[in-house]
Image 1 (cartoon, rainbow, N blue to C red):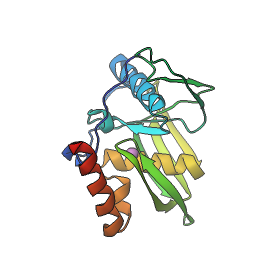
Image 2: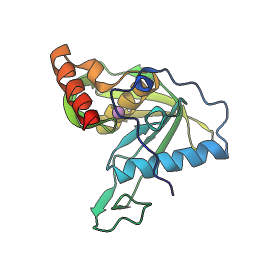
Image 3: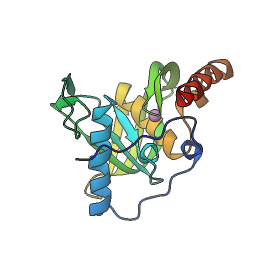
Image 4: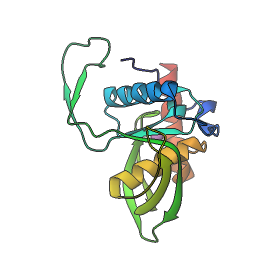
Length: 183
Ligand code: NI
């Protein structure tokens, strides 16, 4: 399965608002599988479609899997094998309820290689979405899953984790990204 090229900050695409998916058809299912494969290859825990250049409201998450490095890269695995995966698919996800309780998490993002910063978000959220079969679901998510789904839904709205931190920290991270791009 394909590994898709990631959109890396700073990129104007990351500020675009993604469009709702009308139908969860085979092309959407294929895209979601490729997004997951791309995410696993980078050891990520969440990915939004905009991060592979597709402006559709699609998120994949897996906060519970094991990854093994290995020396060879067959071209399809990025040199990482994963096992015991628990992939989750969210089409048109919407948060309909936030907890009052806030918790901090040291977030990273596959569009910001090697950058991390603590972000405060509601600890628990209730999410409405379509699953990989197009069935509407309602789910309460907390802790790391809540961090992930909030971070990824932000992406669908053109918001990244650096928009939640101080200007000083944000500028530091963005300058680092600009330097990386010039290398
Ligand atoms: Ni991200």
